[in-house]
Amino acid sequence: MSIIAGQGDAARSLALLWGEAEAGSGRTAPGPKPALSVAAVVAAAVEVADEGGVTALSMRAVADRLGRSSMALYTYVPGKAELVDLMYDRAHAELPGAYSLEDGWRAAATAWAADLRVLYLRHPWLLQVSYARPVLGPCEQRVMEALAGVLFATGLPAYTLRAAAASLFDLVRGGARTRAEARLAAAATGVADTEWWAERAARLGEVAPDFAERFPLSVRLSAGEAEGGAPASWEERMDATHAAGLALLLDGLEAATEGRPGGVSPR
Image 1: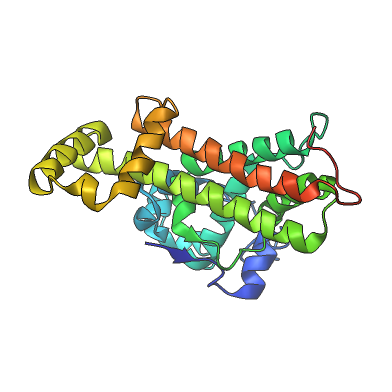
Image 2: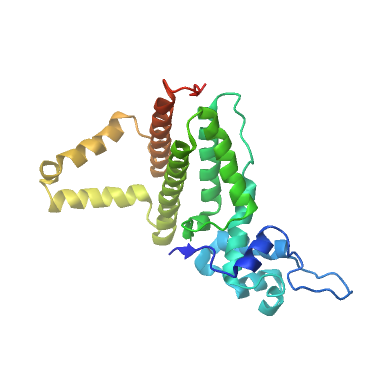
């Protein structure tokens, strides 16, 4: 299930995202400082989502974690829609704001992709938040700015790099989603991926003994994994597939720089 970001009140969401409404309630009267803060509410919400995904996220669940009532949270965050935007942006604060180009743009792009993938796997609920509509927060934007700094080092024009950036995000997000879902499947069913595949492969051989003849190219693709010396575990296989796909994408970007004025070697 995906949650569409940016569904809350635009003025309140953007003010909270960019730090203009930390008080949240608009309190102007003198008195003791509030015991909570927007940052504390967001941090608690991230913990709830890390443990149970976005389906477990509610204002009540966050309030319970903080030992407060749900109504107390509305003093700081208008509702769940705005809270999701804040959580999504805050999680991205864990990523670097820039990457060194000392070893070339390709090494920097690889590091950027690795960091983003680790973030998704550390907070898999991020993959349940659709990025069809960005939250437009500063931390999310820093991630894009860091990638842009790497890509513009290629010397390629902006219209080409825009496509490259979108492809990189899709590649990393898609691979991380598959890996996260594989973990979820094993935990939810109690059956390891290797065990699941072994049983299904054996059963498939019984019900479709002519499978290889009917789908020879699919079998050929599967054989290619063995030819490449695929790792034993399922997660290692997905890691290897991600690395290979990223290399192919960067190969294409590198090829686009060759012979082009202003093009820069990846190293």
